[in-house]
Image (tube, rainbow, N blue to C red):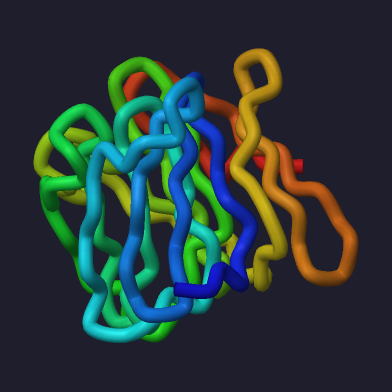
Length: 160
């Protein structure tokens, strides 16, 4: 199948979303496939790889987390409510996912349980990125928002 989206690298592996709806993991040293997951329709965006978690947008309906160590077996899924994930990072055992509609989730990476939801009231272009003790996201108007990170939560009050 053709590949229209940028592959994502994760150490010695690449994760590829093909135009036929399949998501593949490939060992870069041997170029052998090591996992496959079939989406109901093609992904509109490249998967996001954070550690051993592969996050795939399933038609803006749900965020599917695939386990890179388990041949892309699904670990969990949560509703996206029409939004698109723009990025994710792991911080202190939590998965932080930013959506294009300005919502940032703090998730349990094992179960996908949403531990905290923060609305930034800005449309996001990319992020999140870790910068010291802060989380940085970019808005579609070119602004950068910096949020203080605490041990188990995000604080919007200190955003700048």
